Image (cartoon, rainbow, N blue to C red):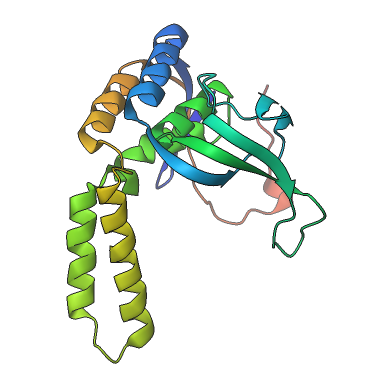
Length: 216
């Protein structure tokens, strides 16, 4: 895996290394300890396969744990998307394990997704690391500062506030401090090796007659 850093006219290319076994263990800890569960009806991944009320593939979390528990029913249905077709989606009634975005990123790293290292480095600025009480306070402030005649924005903010309160009441949110702890642990498992560094500079125009190729 490569990480490319650019700063002005300087471009550095790094090879990325990590302790696979320790990161795999940490991914398992993140999913098991930092996820929360919700009851209801959900849509399974489109590539999932099932028999009766049991998934046989395509509905696992990055650590191999099932995405759904206590399944009461699995069925096919037609979505309302513009590109939908008959029975294009899979519905699930039961319990969904909601893993944090951090687990998704680490899973992408194991899958060698090209942008996963950038997702990982940018994670400290992700909305997931804002405590729910802080989100409620910010939304309250937006509501108070929005003119009562700005109906659409006022209603949107009130609906968002209602959703946040419901999530807090139902404990449908992540432990921010725990995620920060796991993120720092994960960072300690990575190493970067500088592979190349070059200066990108735009020069003056040159007559082809004056061009001299580089010597090999």
